[in-house]
Image (cartoon, rainbow, N blue to C red):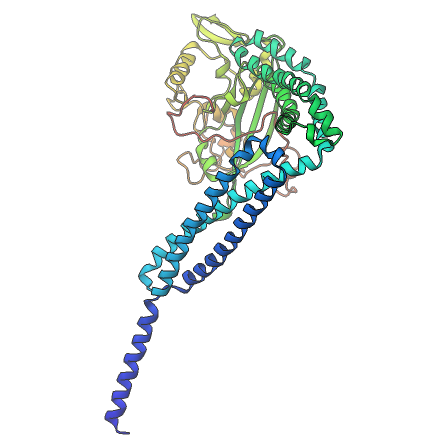
Amino acid sequence: MTKSSLRVLAVLLTVGIIIVLFAGLDSLPGAVKTQIAAERKAFTAAQSQLQSAQAEVSRNLAGESDLFRALPSAREYPDRLARAASSLAAAGQSIAALDQLEKQNRRSDRTRAETLLAQEKQVRAAAVADAESVRADAAHWVDLKQHLPREVQDMERDYKAIHAVDLTAAAAAAQKAEADWPEKKTDLESRLAVARGIQTHSEELWQSTTESRRAAAANDPAKVDFGTLFAAADTLKTGAADLPRQTQQLKTLSGQLYVSWDKVLVDMETRGTGTARQYDQKIKTVSTTVADATGKGGAATSDEKWVDVSKAQYQAMEKDLGMAVEHKPAGKYDTESERVAQPAGFAYMAPPGQSNQYGRWEQNNGTSFWVFYGQYALMRDLLFNHSYRPLDYREYHDYYTYRQRNETYYGRDSATQAPKYGTAGTATQEHYSGSTFAKSGGFNDSKYASKPGGYRDSKFATPGARDPNADHSPRKFGSGSSPNAAPPPSRSYRPAPTPYRPSMPRSPGRSFGRRR
């Protein structure tokens, strides 16, 4: 063969290869073809499943005509099955369109094929689910009829369970709370009425089904009013499950009105680096229980725990150290807590010139200062970290103004003009200078960052802290705080009186509204 012939063959071979390559590139992707085949198989199975459900329901309707005539839900069976069949037929049209696209085998039809696949799958699944729901409902009623004596026994068990619930304690708690907190009267009365209504209605149902229950116990279906009996059985079952829960909820909500609590951010720490970095917050929950709305017998308790939080949650409150990040006053439910950071303890003060159950304003050298009553001294110390200094009316006025504008109040130090509260606050530097956050130098990547020994230049710093030659390395709490001491035990995650749910505050301007 001559060289010219070889060149011609090479050209023809190259052209052929190019044609084959382009032909392959212009076809539907293999993954799409695989999905079409799978959906075609699934559609065929769905057709069989629908036909099986239709046949079973038809047999049940014919064999238990007296039963299903008495059941309102059974009257919808034919329409529900017809809708399922219509939906499946629509899915079949999508399958036909997919078959056509597969035959045409054009790459440009990929998007159209994927859209049809998604639509067909959704419609097919919904149709099968509807048909199976009808099948299950019909089978449920047939099973109940076949076990009538057992159904009566279940009804009696539920009836007795409902009447075994004693509403006396819950009613007494609700009535006391209504008297102490009138604004909750409507809600508590409504909840108590619902609980009592379950017991009253259960008695009515029990009496109205006497004859049907007697016939069912004797396994004499001819004398049973199936619709009434089964509806009563379902209602009693629901009531037996709901009444204890509603009764306990009524007691719990009534009790919540007598407790105020604050979640105070008392420490922060980051650990690790990069993607392995972890964020921790130490939350002190200060709870105060009162005997009535007058605040008599106020008893304060506190609990502290470290909690792991997300980076976003950590950063959302990074400037709120020492602040109450959540506050729930007495007379409110836990779900009505305020989730805006505010200086800890301020929420318990009354407007200037007024007093409340927690304290009063006193005059000193012509200036009004807030004084907590002795019975709330512990609550005061816990909220102010044992560093309370009487607040004058001007500071409260500023705080109240911010709160009325739905803004967070960080105060202003009269000597330095710096913020007084929160992470950058001078009062916080004094109250929390021993925190892990302070000793570690604060956030490295935040505008609130501080150098190692971040409070060293503060007027609240100890002489040793001001000494640049002193050891300013992070220290551990408690015994064994030397550099060579063994690491402290792992943190305790004891549950707080109320589960802490980190809020997601914005910078100044966040709302003081309550959670919905």
